[in-house]
Length: 389
Image 1 (cartoon, helix red, strand yellow):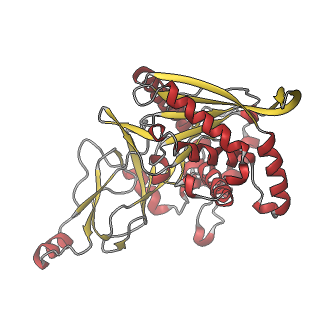
Image 2 (cartoon, rainbow, N blue to C red):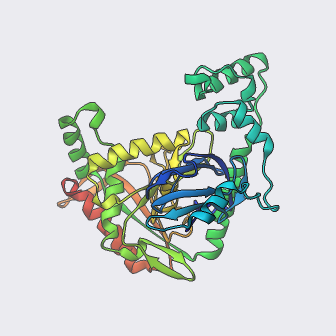
Image 3 (cartoon, helix red, strand yellow):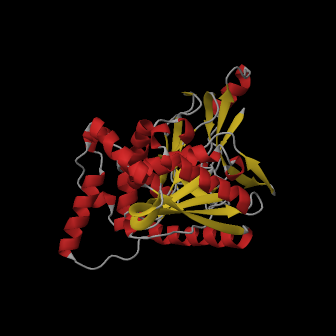
C-alpha cells in the first residue's frame, strides 16, 4: 500500500484544501496522472500521483482543509495482492471519519453538490465576493464558468460601485510571501554578485531568427536568459541545489523556476522542467503555456515543488538591477533588469550597446563568490553565442 498525502507545494505552504477528486476508488492511476485538485493560498493546483496502482480508498472528502503531510487516500501499488475478505470488509465499511483536529466543511460539500462550477470560477468568485448560487450558468450542463462570474461581478459593480476589499486569498498570499522571505533572510547567509552583459549579439541573432519563424513561433528574448542560466548551471552545479536536513543536496536535473506576477497581486515561480535539455522553441511554447496556466490557476503540483533555482526579471517595470531573496529550500536566485543603451568598448572604440544587469543571490553555506562569479561569467559567454543555446 502507498499513502497519497497532502503535498508540500513550497516552503510557505503549511496546509491546503482538497477541492475535488479526479479519480474514484477502484480507478487505476499511473505515475504523473492528475488525481486531485488542491487549493493553496496562492492558487488551485492539479496534484499528480507518483505511484502506479489502484486507488483503494479515499480518506478525506472535498471541502476539507488539512495540514501538509495528511494522508488523503490509499493506493494499492501495482502487483500488490490483497486477500478477498479484507477487501470485502473495506468496501462494506463506512468511510473513515476525518480527524477531529481537521473538521470537515459540510457547507462546501453541500455547495459542491448543488452547483457545478469550475475551480477557476470558484476561485474568482471567492476573490470578487460573488455568491455562485446567484450566478446564471452558461457552461455545458449548467456549469458556472469564469466568464459567468466576471459578468456577475460587472453587474454588481454597476449596481453598487464600492471599491472591493482586499480579497482573502490575496491577503493570505502577501502574508505567506512575507513569512517565507523573512525566513530566508533570517536563515540563509546570502551573498550577492552582479555583472553587466552586452546583449547586442543575442538581440541581433534573435531578430534574424524571428524573421525565419511564423508569428506564433517567435521567441522572446527572455527565453534566451532562461536557457543561458540552465546551461550555466552545468558549469556550477552547486547552485542547482536545495538545502535539506542541514546540508545541500545537488540535483541532477535542472528545473528552472520563473517568477510570474499575478494580475491580482503577488507572484508564483513555477518550474520549467529539464530546462537545459529543451530547444528554445520548446521553451518558448512551455513558457507561454506556464504563464497562462499560472494566471488562470491551473498549475500542477510538480511545477510548484520541483524548481532548483529561480529567475526573476523586472526589466518590463523599468528596473535596472534586482537583488532577489532566495526562495527556500533553493540556494540561488538569478535576477535580470531592463535592457538599456550604454557606452561600451569594442575593439578599442567606444560605441553604444544594449546591455543588461544580471545578478546572483546565493547561499554561502553551499557556494562562494568564486563559484558564483564563474556562473555569471558562463551566463555572459552563452549570451555572446546565442546560436548555440
